[in-house]
Image 1 (cartoon, rainbow, N blue to C red):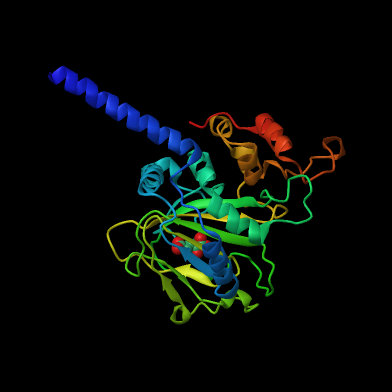
Image 2: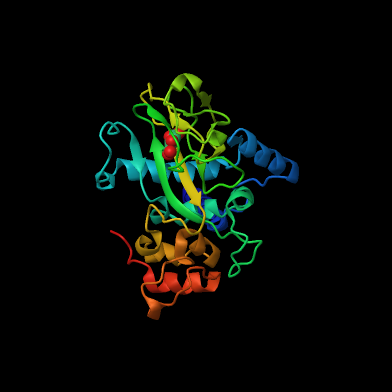
Length: 308
Ligand SMILES: O=C(O)CCC(=O)C(=O)O
């Protein structure tokens, strides 16, 4: 009887592991869609306020899966980055999330993220990829848990106003974030100021959020993060998406491990920059805009052997 129960338990466990693995392959059912009204309101908030919070976008199962990966990577000494700016040693950061698990890239390829990002970052003159598909790329993608306060800054490097933007941040909230544990802060409307931030936290609004929410901001928005005054962590995975022609801050086409590349679709590879690798010389061609098929070819040629 005990043996039968154990066998049954093992079968249930392996079925749920399998189910989890299958879901993780596509993220089907793990990220909720935006209906047209919600999408219109998200777009309006981004245009007017420069940021928006999308409640409950990720399922608990997905949040746990990603949080476990980030926590494990952060516990690993090998993860300490060279060149951490002075004064930022108390922050915890896990760099290059696409190298760690395909789910991080798949999340960026999920319907709601594509719907919002394509609206702001697609190049309408990019003919090698169909216009209803994304042609923007991943600029960098790290997970962050606050330590000391992060001054108000912009991520677009230069301030400018107008309806067009170059980059946006997509923050996947993996743990509840509050004023106590170092939540993101923003200055609503500052993306249209055309000015560098004044670094005065008094103007900023706390962006409190629950694990599973996604917060998106225009990279010109003045923003930062409060200090973490708790014993716990406040993990958020932040992807910066940019126009396809901006130089990436992480060289994903060189660094992506082969075992992960093999699990991604051509569209996901293009998102990592494999469709816009600069040619080395004239023999390599003169085209910087490539198709999904060419992204797949480039990925097969360039993928780095498995790390570790
Ligand atoms: O950790 C946060 O909430 C904000 C991080 C941030 O400002 C950034 O990555 O540019």
